[in-house]
Length: 113
Image 1 (tube, rainbow, N blue to C red):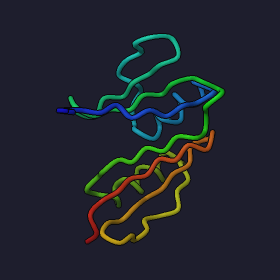
Image 2 (image 1 turned 120 degrees about the horizontal axis):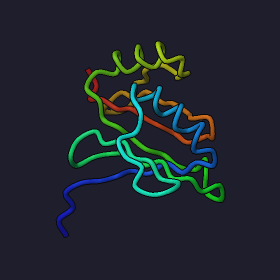
Image 3 (image 1 turned 60 degrees about the vertical axis):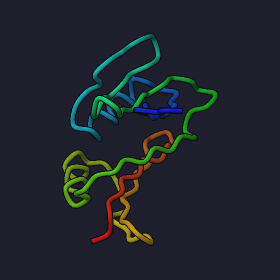
Image 4 (image 1 turned 90 degrees about the horizontal axis):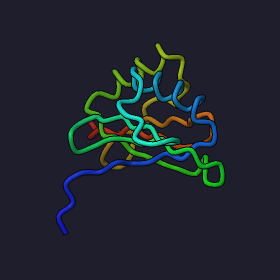
C-alpha cells in the first residue's frame, strides 16, 4: 500500500452553518464543491478536509491538524470569535481543541516546546 495523501471528513447536518463556521476557522471559504452536500478545503496537494452533509452521522467526527505555531492558531481563533480551551500540554506535544456547533472535534497539535 502506498498512501500519498488524505482528505479527512467532518460530517454535519447543517452544511450552510458548517460552511460559515469552518470558513471562520480556516480564514477562508472552501476550495471545491465536488458534488451536492460535499465541500473541500485543500491545505496542501496531499492534505485537506471535507464537510459532508449527513444528519444521521453528524456531530461524531474528529479531525487532527498539525500546526507548528499553536499561539498563532489560538490568536486566529480568538479573532474569529471561535471558543477554545487554550493550549494544553500532552505527553510529547501540545494541543488546542475546538468543538464545532454540531459537536465535532477539531484538534490542532504541535510538538512540545
